[in-house]
Image (cartoon, rainbow, N blue to C red; front, side, top):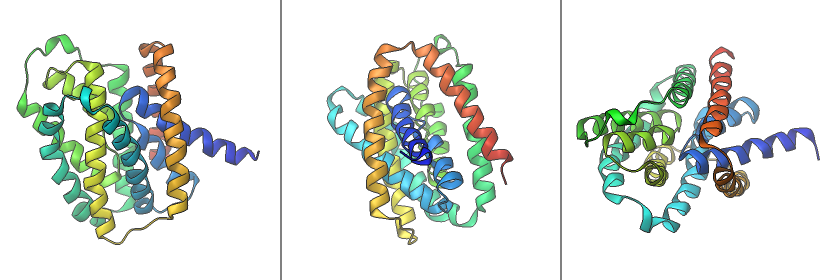
Length: 245
């Protein structure tokens, strides 16, 4: 097998692995790959990310719907959903790609920092609707602008500001990512952005396989070690995106 094809497969599998283990982070890997390695324009890369990650997280949400805290999901989504759609329709077209990728790099480094130095959850024992609302609005803007669902942020947000147990928060995070992806997707399709169906199917399948692998890895490996490794990988991606012209 050609080395470049093997690299492509490994990267796309890692997208699914990240989603399964952390409830997000897939687009943080997928979009730099599509733009920097596969050579897609940013809008097409974002659309492909929204389609493939949205479908996979949506499918997992349907299968696990009975164990999801839908009150928390709806409380978050009622703000994030329209914000993602508006951001994808009106903000993304007027923001230069260089600025969007800078935001992407900064976002990636922020995610890595929060993974390495997590907030002390013991300091939060009550629901905080205002903090949840602000988090939802910011996540919606980021999702529409650069195609990142913010899943890694959503899970700890639900845990901190809605008192949702962390394992349940990860499932809720995937449900919210699916809803946000659908909302942002409408904005990009409405602007006439399109991608190859064949490419979408190929990426879709590999991400799905990665999610199966990630589910097994999560059960067999220490969460602390996994988060440290993934945070280190995110730091490399964030620096690469910021310094590469």
